[in-house]
Length: 159
Image (tube, rainbow, N blue to C red; front, side, top):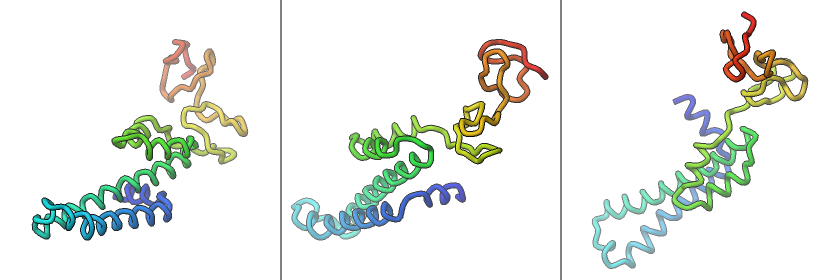
């Protein structure tokens, strides 16, 4: 649960406010304007009306919070956050939200020497040149500790 609450904290207070206002506004609009004017829905029991309007309000709140999360998460990952936010908003059936979670970049790590954010797949820091992970002497691609041969070119690695 700690990881989930840490992830919720990156959503901006503005997104929280918009989500809560829109969700409660939709709930109230349905409860006091749409349901009484509809012939079939007006005959539902009170609990059914509350569940229907409250459920739709919760769904709208969740979608707006997901868009707010995508904006903040794409920003911290160094991605094009405006583009991903707009895709999450305008692609129908939440396709933009699904695409973001499938295609998002990994979280950047910090260089041990200068502290600059770097992609975890980088072998060297682009700011100071510090070696971040081992590199194959032949092809210069990143290697994992314990490899005896490079997975990319097949070259022998020093033990």
